[in-house]
Structures are given as C-alpha cells and as structure tokens.
Amino acid sequence: EFVGDKDLSWKNAQASLQDGSKFVKEILEMSGASFVTRKSLERMDAVGKLRPSALEDGNPAAFAMAVYLEAVIDAAQEKLGMKVQPVKELPPPAENPPAWPIKIPFKDINQSLSDAIKFRRT
Image (spheres, one colour):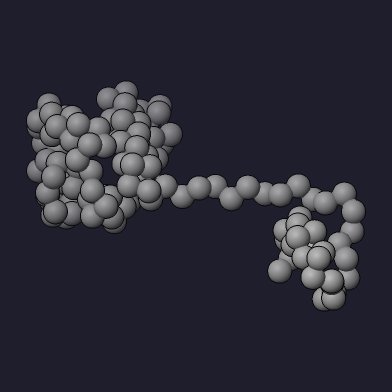
C-alpha cells in the first residue's frame, strides 16, 4: 500500500522491496501525509502495525523508514480526524462520594452533575 497499490500480498511487497532506491522514491512521492486517504490508512492498518523500536538496533535505513512512515500515518490520522485521543485519567477524589442514588432539588443540578463527573458516576 505504501507504494500506492492495493495488492497487500507478501509476494507484491517483496516485488516492491527488490529495488530499495525505487521503493524509497515511491515512499517519498507520497509527499508526507498529503495524499494519504482514509481508505489507504485502513489498508496500511490491515498490513500490520509499525514498530520502529524493533528495528532500532538493526538496519539504520529500515529504522529511519519506519519512523518516517509512522510520522506520515500519524499526520494523516490527525489531518483526517482519525487520531484517537488518549483518555485522561481523573485524579482520585479527596473526599468520599455521596451515597447514590440521591434526590436533589432542581436548583442543585449543576453541583450534582459536577459531583457525578468528579466521582465518575452517572
């Protein structure tokens, strides 16, 4: 997929990788994330996940290419609104929560809603 083709077979990947300089040229023709689409991201994901750290102690060119592709994928996901935002863990509350369920007057809804959020309750 990284070379613009939809054949995800290993045989096709081997053919693309036979000529390293041609492969690098095809990768760089992607112009970063400029031409990466949602569909191409899905196909890249189907191939597998990048793990540049696994290549760090091996071939420097392979490591550099993996880091570059990881950056391209990250930028494309952000551009397309597909980037998963990390869930922020709320700090544990200093006090104990009220004993739910509770009845509250209408005027206290905002405060009770804040308490429910603080204690991660609905």
